[in-house]
Length: 418
Image (cartoon, rainbow, N blue to C red; front, side):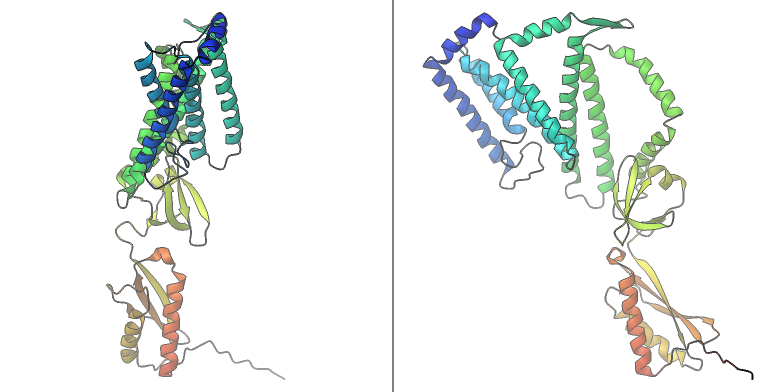
């Protein structure tokens, strides 16, 4: 960042800003902004994705524009430092740093929490803090304030911390966290883009990369704050004890999530039945799996349940699913001529799989008639099962009516004694 100016240099800075040379500096800064806008525009292409962290919807509201502008401004400042007084750059560079920090933090939170109302309040808070920090830096008050915060210290074990370490560590942790979330989101979007059969492997890779980036970012933030990382070994042991007792279920769900994604026994899009709930898997997270039923209801199933209990997967080998319907015909019906007609008619029903021929079996001699069970296959059970079963029943009913075959029903004789 630009060198801070002390309080007695503010007058000289103002005198430099009103000189004609500052117009040249202003032109260079504007040129850096224009070049950054052009590069981001060419990089993004014609398609504008408002959810993009790096590009945004209008280019200037993304993270890449202020970051690239800051890099170009620093490069121009290094090239022109011996020829110009650098008055405008002393103001422009802190402003670009603040703008990049605001864009990074707000954009990352909006992607991960799109419906949260707290994000708006957080955006305003970050904006006010960033601009106040910029003003304090340019005026030279911020270094003095940081020196005063360094005098407030306390000891935690063998480590001495100051209030300045806490403030700088908090800011570093937030920035590193936002950067880690942004990078992991971009990597996950790139990994899941166009995924078909290997979606589960890409999902586990995205989750592993996110966890690794967050862990590495947290360690860097603590190191930047002056915290001795070796002192975290005690905390790690305490966390391990907590996972072994109070958090064992949570840890089991996370481990089960990675096992499911790794062995691919359950994949996104599979039609499964778990604990009397049947639905299609729409998402597999590290802690739970989301099932969506045909009626629109969704079930959040802990991953441990999918590992320890029986799960019926109708799409593990292929998507074909056998459906069954039952009909009765009167005794004396010529089944040898009726069954081939039913098989041919069911085969012509839309959505019935032509690769596997339907089958009609005499399954019972019922009290009222002969019970026939019709088995047929569908290749797209995700489009519904009741609708294709209804179409098969209607086709069978029409065949029986056209053939003059009665569907028996129970009859009772009631005698009334005088």
